Every structure is written in C-alpha cells, then in structure tokens.
Length: 350
Image (cartoon, rainbow, N blue to C red; front, side, top):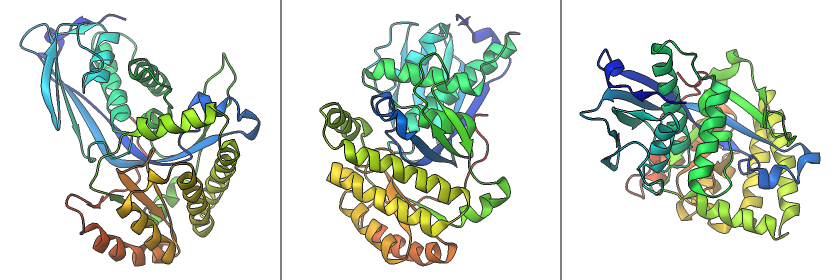
C-alpha cells in the first residue's frame, strides 16, 4: 500500500482522526502466549473505552520528509523508510512507513496522561491508521475498517517492539463502548470475538459506578508483561492464570447484568492474584488506594500491566461517592497524581 507524497492533498485541508483509551480487566490474556494454551477455558478480556481520546492531525510538511510532533517528546523528522523504530516515536514512524507516505507533518495530542497504562501508544497507532484511511478516501480509494485498523496496529506494534503484544488496546480504540473480547485461538480465523456488554441506556449508571485515578508515576508495561510471559513459558504460576481467566468471566457476567458488588468482588480477587504473581503491580500509593476501595465496598485494580500509571475502581454509585473523597485525599500526597474526569465513550475510532 503506497500513498506517496500526500502534501498536495493536505494543502487542501488537514486530516484529523481520534480514538479512545480504555480501562481493563483480564489484560495479558489477549497475548497469544497465554490464550492458546488456555484455550479450553475460553480466555477473554474486558475493556471499557473512555472519552480520554488521542487526536492525530495531518498537515503538509515543508518537504518530503515525515515529521511527527507529540506531547512530551521532541519533534523529529526522517526521510521515508529511514526512521529507527526504537525511537520514542518509532511505532508512529513504522505506521507511516507501512503506508509508504511522504510529505506529512503528523501532530499527536492526547487528553490522557502519558504512559498511564490506558493504552496510549496503541490508541495513537489506531488513530494514525484512521487518519491514513481518510487520506485514502480523499484519493478515491476504499478506507480501512475498524477491525483491520486494530489488527494492523497490533501487528506493526508487535513487529517494532520485538516482544509478544496483545490486541485489547487496539480493539477498544477501534470499537469503543464496553466489551468482552474472547480469544478463540483458531488459526485462520479472526483472532477475537466481540461480546458487547450492557445496553447503552445503562452507560450513564456505569459512569456513576467508576472512578479512575492517575498515580503520578508512569509505567512501563513491557517490564511486568515480560516477567509474566517468562513465568508462564517456564511453567510457573499457571494455576493463577487459570484463576484469572475464571475471574474475568465472573467480572464480565457481573458487569453485563450490572451486579456491581459481584464485579467489585471479582476485581479485588483478581488484583490479589496479580499481586501474588508480581507484587510491584501496585506501588505504594496504589496499595493505599486499593485498600480504601475495599473499605468502601468497591473493587479496584491497576490498568494495563500496572507498576504505576492508573488505578480504577468499580462499585455501587453510593460506594463510589464515598470512595471519591478518600482517593482525592490520598492523591494529594503525590505531585501530579489525581482523579481523571472521564466518562464511557461509546464511539470508537472517528
């Protein structure tokens, strides 16, 4: 797929696309290392898209190079096909190289904190592919479907990362909403099955039943994920991954029927198992927030692979109301930490 120099197209007007981030339960099971051996247990992952979106805008560049600007990272530009993929923006340059594009200035802006465990880089990759899809449509070509956007973004990320990568972040970005994703592990077929959870007229109730906090420290998901992968491959703690699989089913079923107490209970039990695997999934402030959630009858867990980033809670609306001031007080103890004002986002990539 070669788009070539798109400066003339962009000179007629910028192209913009966006996609939502997510909170999750049962992450890691979307990595083939886990869901192929666990196939008989029907592993799945639940994610909830949030209105903390990442926006990608294309402008014509000053020359044929690809220039990328992104919050918190110095701008950089390379000739097509020459960018190093271990660059902080390497995934974005790799996506641009896939489309064989030139003459574009890519501006990336996110409303969620950087490296917060909400799927940031994967979301940006999906939004970037969506922007290229819009360019293709301007050129009279067919665009890229949301399913293909997710699959392509995951494949490029796994290729550039050089380690096994899941696909739940990309799917939440592409489809939005509240979903349970199953991983059937059947070669030659779609690698995922989507089960939408909750009727959309229940979204407002779930909004009042959630709380999301940024811990004020960034996380690096590859560190903890790599440890989990090594443990699993080495035959260690597989009983715990079977328990995580079962608890994810319990959580999905409880969420689907809005049994928030059951959902909170499943969440706390899953967090306990994850801590047994790797205690560092919750750093000190995260531990205190989790304890406060339990005391108010809520469930809480880290997002992504933990170790910093965000923590999210679920519970009956009255319990969440009681938890909110407790979390706010705890979060004042660390500069940069705080609650994230967000709601569910039923839209996917746009």
